[in-house]
Every structure is written in C-alpha cells, then in structure tokens.
Image 1 (cartoon, rainbow, N blue to C red):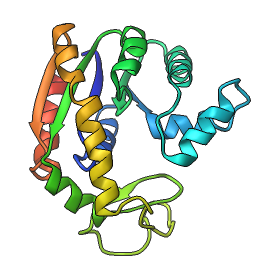
Image 2 (tube, rainbow, N blue to C red; image 1 turned 135 degrees about the vertical axis):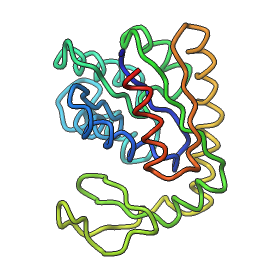
Image 3 (cartoon, rainbow, N blue to C red; image 1 turned 135 degrees about the horizontal axis):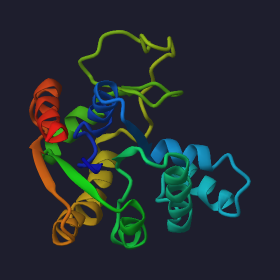
Image 4 (cartoon, rainbow, N blue to C red; image 1 turned 45 degrees about the vertical axis):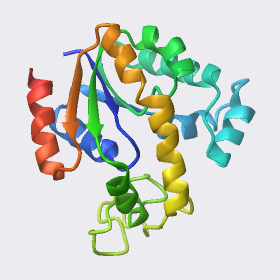
Length: 207
C-alpha cells in the first residue's frame, strides 16, 4: 500500500477517519496541514513571518512553505507510509507537491454541502489538540486531555459555506488530475456513520 491522501470538503470527517486509521494501522504517520503549519510558524525559517500571518488570518499557506514542510517531514519519516490529511488543496500546490509525495492512493469522502454545514455549525474543538467533537457529543471537555471545548469563531453557516465553496472550486478538481496521473481513487459516501465509513476504508487499506 502506498501513501494515502484523504480528500473531502470540510465536515466530511477526514480528521476522524485519519485518527481511526492511525489507531488501527501503526505503520502510518500523519501529515496534517494545520498541525504542521502551526509547528512551522514557530520556527526561524525564512518563510516563518509570512506563514504565521497566513495561519492567523485563516489564509492558504505560501506554497514555498508547504513544500519545505513536506520535504522535511518525508526526510524525518523515511521508509514510512504517510497519511496525508487535506495536504494538497490547490492546483498550484499539486504542481509543487505531487512529485514530492510520489505514489499515493486517494480516498475521497463525498458529502453534500448542507449536511456539511449542519455538522460544522454544531461542532466543538479542543483548542490545544484541534480534536473535533460533533454536535451529538455531550460534555464540555475533551475526555482524553481535560481541555475545555470551544466553538470556532469561523464556524458560522456563512463562513462554513465560503470555505466549502473554496474546497469545491480548488481542491475537488484535483481528483481527476490524480486519476489521470494513475493514482488510485476510492470514493466513499460520507453520509454514513463513522463506523460504516471506516469499514470501507479498512477494505481499501488491507487491499
């Protein structure tokens, strides 16, 4: 099995399924853009100031910074299978990153916009670990860390629709690009339960 690229609009459950994969299959390491950006913004690299500004403003990170993060990550995890969670998000990034990651299969979690908005508008997150909890979760703290859960300031319906529109316009077209470049594409309905989605992912991972 090659590296895995998880793709889907916000609310499709990429974060949840990535954690399930990591828990079940110990031979994967996670490259998650948000986490790596936060780490990178704390370094003294030449791209640091611009990256920090983008992270704080909720904008796309500079492609040069993303490339450097990817190269460093792969170097530090040589020989391991990488789980890519929302890493390549635009044609520009793909032009610079696809060859760096090399062989990867794509798992596309397909979800309709209105269901995504409903999910995201009611979710809460751990401000330290970024772990996400759905609207159905009862309690005010992360049971693993004890951190108090918060609602993201940008999780209003209008803001969510704008983020999703950007994903649909910039990221989802890459699926056909990857298909043309001979990456395997697996499409899974994200309207199912977390368990049903993961059952389909397990079949893919186990080949």
